Image 1 (cartoon, rainbow, N blue to C red):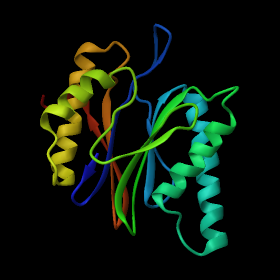
Image 2 (spheres, helix red, strand yellow):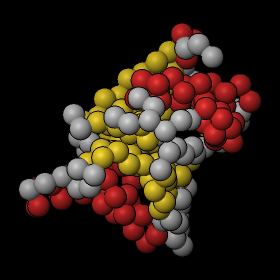
Image 3 (tube, one colour):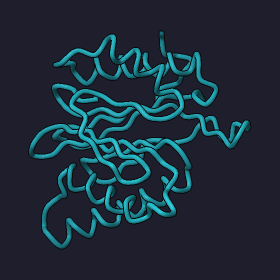
Length: 193
């Protein structure tokens, strides 16, 4: 979600393996750099491998160029990796978000490498239709990060109510500002509707 003072990512913590709940405490937000993070939906192993690769590439970029990569630079690199594997695709849908010299940005990527900048918000995963309904109804331009976090938690709670693949014990919130990335975990049972 794009907010007036930064970019925001939110994710619940349930991981499934078919009809089995594999974990109720998964981490679906991965910090890639000190100003960029990514959410994952799909196959955890694929997403974790991509995150490790992207973290290494962003670190290498900053060493070689004496500056941090832009958010679009990170999203484009990830897009190229995904597109290069289109005949044996990674089973993921990702959101890359961050804050750079041009301000806050969010990009969504599909398994074949399509990358789109989202000006307001986006949602991935099995619960996204329910979450998008709440976001479409309640998002307003100029939300603060705190207001955005409350809205994102409400959207995720809506998904949890109707989607068998959403849930877990927590909702993680990542806020990317000019000061960096801050990720916090919130107990689902203590979050109001």
